[in-house]
Image (cartoon, one colour):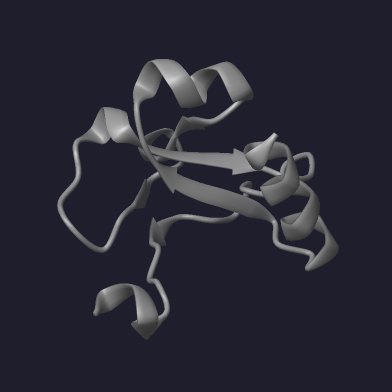
Length: 76
């Protein structure tokens, strides 16, 4: 239910996708794909099989690649 609410709120804000760090077996069940498949990296070292993204709209990652940077509040 928490992931569903996250997706609802992200769509209301018109975010094209969600990035998440977590267990491969769990998040893949909810349609999350490895970020590396889209040439997207985290701004910190993480195992490739633990960093995911999920498109919120069809082809919303079509022209997206690179490093995702977080707000300063996450860096403290």
